[in-house]
Amino acid sequence: IPDPGLTNSPRIDQLIHDNKLDLSLQDAVDLALENNMDIVVARYNVWYADTDLLRTAGGGVGRGTAGASIPFSQANIPGLSFDPQVTGTYSIDSRVIPVNNPFISGTGVAGISALSAHTSTFNTQYTQGFSPGTSMFVSWNNTRSSSTSPALLFNPSVETSINIGFQQQLLNGFGKSINKRQIYISKNNRKIADLAFSLQAITTVTNTINAYWELVYARENVNVQQQAVTVSEKLYNDNKKQLEIGTMAPLDVTRAESELATNRQNLIVAQTAQLQQQQALKNFISKDPLSPNLVRVEIVPTDKPNTPTGVEPASFEEAVSEAFQKRPDLQEQVYNLKNANIEVKATRNALLPLATLTAQYGSTGLSGNSGVPGTSSTIAGAQVVDANGNPIPGLFEPLTITPTVATDHKGYTDASSQIFHNNFPSYTVQLGVTVPIRNRVAQADYQRATLTQRQMQAQIQQLKNSAILDVQNTYVALVQDRARVEAASKARELQQQTFDAEEKKYQLGASTVYQVILTQRDLITARGTELRALSDLAEAKANFERALGRTLEANHVTIADSNGSGPEKDTLIPGTLHGQVVGTEKLFKKLDSDSAAGTNSSQPGQK
Picture 1: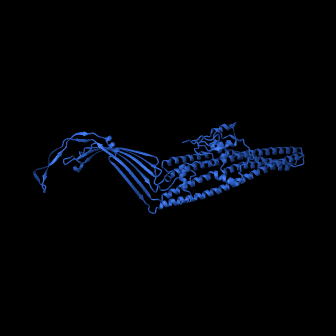
Picture 2: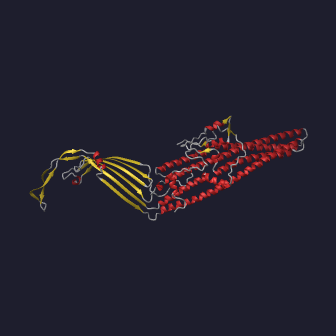
Picture 3: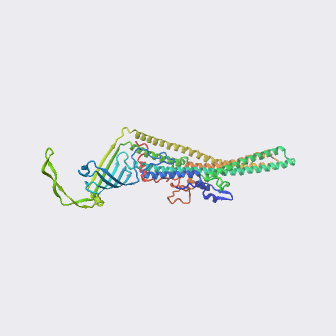
């Protein structure tokens, strides 16, 4: 399990020179993907989804992950363990048994009053479940017994047996798609986790881009306000000199001083905004903004806002179509609907009666030490009695005695031979049927699953409508901001010409300080408006790409798959396990064939 890595990536130190962080827009995006804590936290959701894949592959139930509306199937279907299990037991039993019936115990009339018995057993069993709804077992049981009872044929004796059986669900719980539903859901949930991670990456990249351009604007605004202060100081100093020589009225000096104070105040506000935007960007591109090597570093953006090349599709309809294909939030809901379809099919199957077919075959072997009989002889036995039970003198029942002359030693090998020769087989076939009366729990589960399916169909349309509105708003904002930049640039050029002309007129005595101050204010406003329009245009472009779902590919970002060879030279988000290039039609196109079989079998609207 990877460590979260709470220290900044080495790339930050490589970009710091003379206590300044020279930062391009692409560097800012790269650093955000490497260090942003939202990315670090979201990355674990993908790994959570992988644990659900492992869990459901063994027959367990998933725990769910971020973005997944259906974490697991709740259908009441007999569970199966796809992981094989091997169990083994070994026991020893030794006891002394009091004798209550000597004839049953084999000790005879004059038998002993107690028996000693010693038993040792070793049993092992293999069990496994299979996706059609089948479970099977193979057991191997072994027992060795010895006793002081003379009635045993084998003493000590060895008994061994092998049993093979299976159980098949015929109605409720029958079928591969039903019993692998948890696997299908966890696979879809892993794709949802990938998409949720992509969505977080898009959000982080967009916020980083916006913060970058806000910092660029704040720094440029500081320069504009500094220029205003410089011009105001020059005007104020010139007016003071003219006042001293008597060619300037005191009121004009006061006006110039007031303008200087106002511009200094605006400069302080602009410098404060720059520090705030710088700290905001540091928070996006670092794990620890207060680290000693970063806390006092000044960020110097190296990219300047300019009018971007056209990124808008040929028509609004094409933009909406692209958004429908690429937006992760829409793709997430598509996979949630697939899970809902799986759940509808599973809960419909749970309405069926439980019919279980069981079959079992066994073979047993028994062997051990036994006596070898000698020559039999007949002697007088018990005396013959009359009808009243009185003995008849001179008449005795004959008694045949067969002495034991040797012991025949046999054991486990002979018992095993009997198994494989099928000397003592056993067969069992059973069909059990359980019919629930009313079955209200299963009915409620099915109705709830169907309601969830219908709700998700509505939610997909709801998300599409939201996407249409998002695309429309960002599309209009982009077009308008592009026009704003053109207008603001033209206004700034004209205002610069106006200020230059007014300043020359003032130097020639044809204008007043008040007019110069007014044109200076207008020029400062025009410069600020142009900078604001350029930054807004850059941010509008980022927001439009976010609305279309193309943010990552537009910024050369690829979500890496650590199991593959990886893309060439694109920015990678380290630590991710799954995914392809975000924003392509091939996103998660290749599904497991089993998953496809499970999801396609139940389409929306089926009854």
